[in-house]
Every structure is written in structure tokens, then in C-alpha cells.
Length: 242
Image (tube, rainbow, N blue to C red; front, side, top):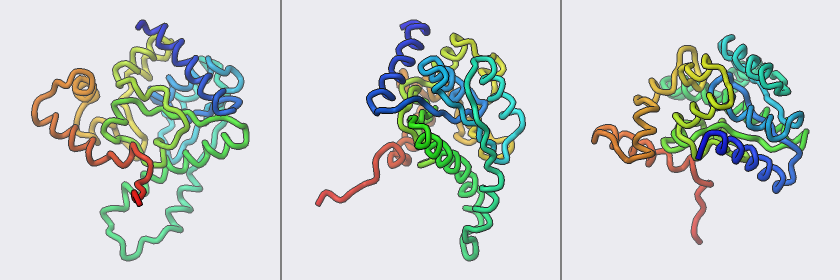
């Protein structure tokens, strides 16, 4: 399948999924990164003025916001900006911390950011009658590299069957800036954070294993362990069988 065929099929699929759900359009969080930029462009091509890109800085780097705005301008994507800094600060101050293990604080607070974004997305989706379109790709989903009920909270995942390398190819076909394509992937959880450093492996290594099953033994074990440990993220909450 060519990239043009893939793009057109994804645009049609997004439109069909929203139509079946009785929605009017699509809302997507725009982080300034590769995946969300690709999804935002696909949604704009599927719905034009009924696609909304939500830019939600939360103690984020200014460059991320600038990149999201640049994509929106280039592809004429309607956007709204919701600054979540204050909400995040109040929540961190309000939640209990006394008696809790200090070492768990950093990641727990970092995960509040994507969860706050999920809340904002679903609020706007409800007000507009839109579906929330997520940007997780196959590589991230396979090893659970997403925040449960955060960026993992979406109605549809158009990139869910594409590994990171395929998303890069699709981005190039769509005409997304090379600066964004080459940008080190980051969930933006803290300053200087990158996906590959946090996972402890490269997307190239992960993609190769997912698409061919080939990887050195140590890497296979690591990826399989990550997949097993995060199985709960890819499933509905467990229920008793009785």
C-alpha cells in the first residue's frame, strides 16, 4: 500500500468511525509532536472546519506549543488553547502527600498532565458532539508507553496499527515539517524527557521486533517484559467471571 492509499484509507476510516458513533466531528490534542500532528492533519482532511486541535500546555516547553501552532497554520486546522498550568498546580497542592513514598511523587505528578488533557478533550468533545481522536501508535501501545486514562483515553486510534517508522513516512507524505519529523519523540512529562531514554530502547529497535520478530535476546526479553507488565493498559478493567 502506498502512503497516499494509506492516508486516504485513514481519512475515510476516521470519518466512518465518527459517523457510526453519531458524532459531528473530531477533537485531537496537539502537542507539537509527530504523532499528534499526523492525526490532526488526517482529522482536518476528514472534517475540515469540524476538526478541532486542542493545544494544552501544562508547564510545557514553548517550542512544543510553537510547533503545534505551526502545524495548525500550515494545514488550516482550527485550534483552541487551554493552559493547564494553574489546574495542575492546584491539584498537586490539593492531593495528599504526607506519609507517602517520596520516590513515587515525580511520575505520579507527571501522569497528571496527560490525564488533565484527557479531561479537557472530553469536555470539548461533549460540548461539540465530537469524538476524541487519540494519537498513540502501535509501537507505544505494544509496550504500554502511554498514560492509562491519559493519552490512552480516546474514542479512536487511527495510528494504532502503524509503528513509529510508518508514522514518520506518513508525516513526510502529508507534508509535515521535517523539523517535527526529526524531533526527538517525547511525552512532555518533564523537561528534557524523551521516549527512547525513558523506555531504554530505540523506536527503530522496537519497530523491527514488532514487524519482523527480530531482535537480540536481551532486547526481546525487555520488550516482552514491558508488554506483559502493561497488559492491563490495553484491556478493559478486569471483572470477576461469576
